Length: 391
Image 1 (cartoon, rainbow, N blue to C red):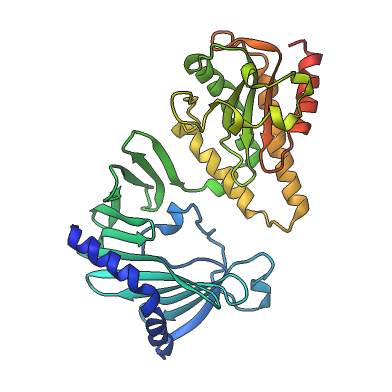
Image 2 (image 1 turned 90 degrees about the vertical axis):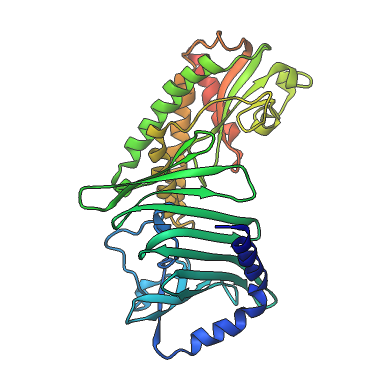
């Protein structure tokens, strides 16, 4: 790839909004394509798009809507496709987001490349979202280029036979890249995708059969990790010279694991501790020693050892499958997550962290869902547990 091609793709992206309606009309007028509907995103030109997004369908998923029972407008997404039955390819996709709001994608195919471009549409506006090219070499993916309003990315594949073995993902305007590795099982099915960033961080993007994992067992494993591994890291990496009044985990039910971690220091309390509201004392972004802060006061706790990452994917997928309208199921899941953090905090109270910091008399290990602001629930139970056990 070179700058000339990048410039050409950027110019094409800039013109999508003005040319889209004409291209859409041509696609919709083709009589050789049938219209089908689904509750799933079934087509993208990027190889393994559903695995990369961790949105793999179960083998028994019903792909197309055939009757009213197959679609619930309250909970399901709705996609409309134009498909050529001869080559089984999609040429048009419209994702419905309510009355007259859509994300519409058009696909084009040649022997040298596949192409897609997507726009956002409503009654008043049409905006380009992305333009993508998948260039082919000997019939296999060679390079995937995507252009959005934020710039261009390039993914270059290495293939062996009929298998993609690895790729390099880079951003031409930034000094950063990732190397992806794809592993397959004995039957040739994709088993795992891992990505290593240029700074050495490794992330699991996909691992097969996660849907078969027992969530309660996964929560127990996460509890052990957040106690044992994180305690070891605190003792090894954290050195705070002033008195600490709390160790705080924060999470959100949109992705409850991993949490962030913060250490509240006494000098951050203006006035008497007893006079403060809980939200003033236990709010991680207000703390100097917060894992999301930049240097020099960052807390270098690694929540992403490769052996625990698939557990995060299981809990995220479990939460995403619960319909937001199902209040009872949402409450059960929120309670399971809260109980896990309660156990973590209680177990950590038994550790001696004097090597890393000095505790104040009112030191407490705490957690909170920063969206639900449930610090009062945590504080009541954890402070009582501390008192009962003489910590």
